[in-house]
View 1 (cartoon, rainbow, N blue to C red):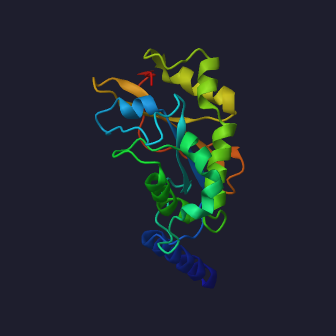
View 2: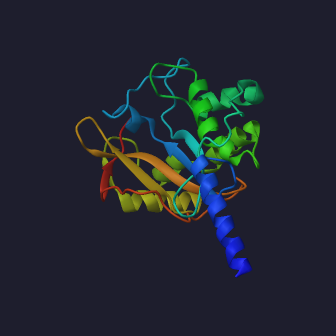
View 3: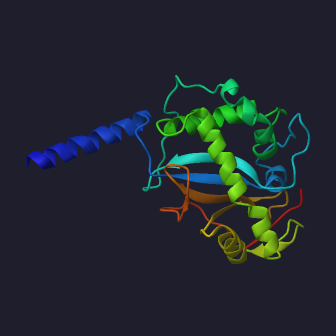
Length: 227
């Protein structure tokens, strides 16, 4: 009975911490990359190129998000640990290339990075400080060349339609792991390839098979728009 009570107390404490958004660990990361052509060709978003100019026609980082195996996730875990650009000064050039913001109004990316760190990064601060968090995401971006994986399978951003199965297989063949695909709709209501989720262990070092996928699903066919 004593051990059951202790287990119940521990469970209740963890639930309270989750509700309060307190950083207490997590199970894995979602590493999310987005296709800029689908972001910009959608009524859901307002698209503005960065102040540094139009990004490359390639998948860019959206975020590195701590997650739990039950599908929930921590967020805004440490309001005292705010984004500090000086801590990543040596990464800025690479981040502007690989982690640009397409939100309006145009910016050089700092507000986007600040949002990602404060909402998601702070929840992994026990393992990754700010510099390590952003460096980890950049390293993963280099390890997972999504566009090359798709091109190798004949899937190119030409506005054509491709099957979801072929897209997933191409990315799995290129990375070694099963992706989750997020779609959005273009201005004409057509489904299009928007984001690719891959899973990473809690150290941020190794890709893994996803313990759980996000909710939602794409249709069997989707467009891959130009950018």
